[in-house]
Image 1 (tube, rainbow, N blue to C red):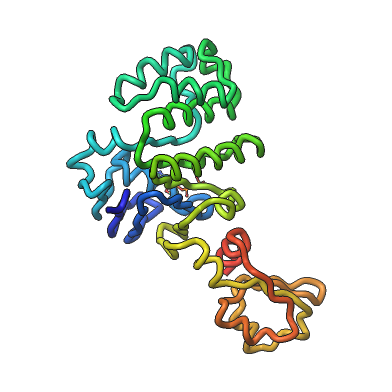
Image 2 (cartoon, helix red, strand yellow; image 1 turned 90 degrees about the vertical axis):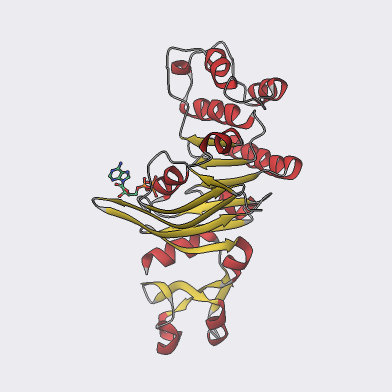
Length: 280
Ligand SMILES: Nc1ncnc2c1ncn2[C@@H]1O[C@H](COP(=O)(O)OP(=O)(O)OP(=O)(O)O)[C@@H](O)[C@H]1O
């Protein structure tokens, strides 16, 4: 059974329309959610969680309909939208004492181990935390109740490279050890190159790809060379063509790469796919 199934979700704001959003997050998988600023990632995540009310569409967590089973779903799910900057005057231990009461599956030794791992002092107040530390505290809370699905909006932004790497290892550990699923948005595509199994790509409120990451990346090639060597028929097929000083670069669908004889054709990565796709 899918951890999350989203079908034909619609949400309309005066100047933005989330259109026919459908995708699924399979159990035990890490799904990355990518798209430009304003593409609709946060709106999608909030609509799924009923934090904003979608206009239409269906959302199921663990086979249970949302919002009919909202309470049961949220006990089995952990969400993070940015840093834990609520109640700035409260100590971390006070926030945790309130938070843990909502989750029968709260695991105090696990919570203590994450506090230690992230170097967080439970006696500190929220306002005394740096941006990165307050994200780590939000993660500590989210990771301590054995959630079956983690929904995280840009969890790695604001973390230093070492902490980011550590968090990605924690993600892998949770998925491998507990069979949980993780659905997280990010602009740091190299994080997804490292450990996402699946990818969902949203552009201007519409999902343009959702599925296996390796297959998605393998369906493109980077191509570059001298502009004079680029045959017109191939030029028409290049996605996100960039030309400067007689040289060009861009992206080709793998099926078109056979026609690129004499040009430098290399494997694509998520960043090059995103940049070239958005360039058009
Ligand atoms: N409450 C709201 N009322 C009106 N418009 C909104 C509201 N929330 C978001 N929007 C609009 O919806 C669009 C998508 O915003 P959203 O925050 O979902 O994008 P995003 O992909 O998460 O962007 P970013 O990567 O910058 O975080 C934007 O144009 C934004 O202005």
